[in-house]
Image 1 (tube, rainbow, N blue to C red):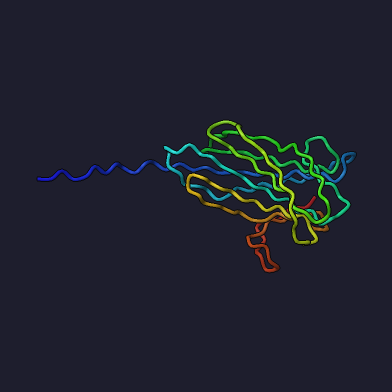
Image 2 (image 1 turned 180 degrees about the horizontal axis):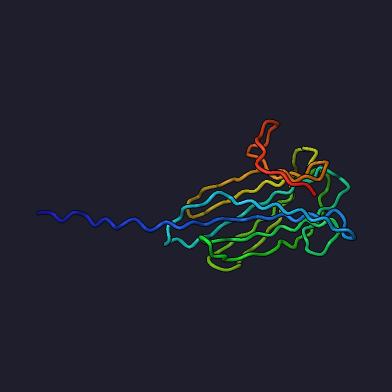
Length: 183
C-alpha cells in the first residue's frame, strides 16, 4: 500500500489595498485643496508572502511653462500621499517630496516600493516623452513582483476647470468616469 503524497493545506488569504490621495493647490497664498482618494483593487496574496509593492505614478504635463512640484510646502504643489494597508492595519505612508521640472510635453514617473511592514521605500524619477492630452494625467499602476502581475485602477486628470477625474483604463473619449471632484 503506497502512501499518498503529502498535500499541504492551502494558505490563508490576506488582502492588501493601496489608497492614493492627491492634494492639489493652485495658489499658495490662497490654498484650495482637492483630495481624491482611490483604492486600487484588492489583492489576494498568501499570508506566507511578505508583500513587495511597487507603485508607478506617471504625471503628464501638457503645459510647457508650468512647473509641477511634488512637495508639501511649495507653490503649485501636488502632494502624493500613499498609504499601504494589510487588511485594516495601516502599514506605512508618506509623501513624495520630489520637485519635477518638466521640459515641455513630458512624463515624470515616480516609483515607490514598499517592502514588508513599515515605510521602507525607494524612489526613482524618469522623464520621457508623452502625448499631448491637453490635461494633467495621473496614471496609477500597481505591480506585485511575487506574482509578476500589474494592476491598474484608472487614470486621473486635471482638466481646464480644475476638476480631478478618475476614469477607467484605457483613457479614451468614451471612458467611464469613476469619480470626479472639483477644486
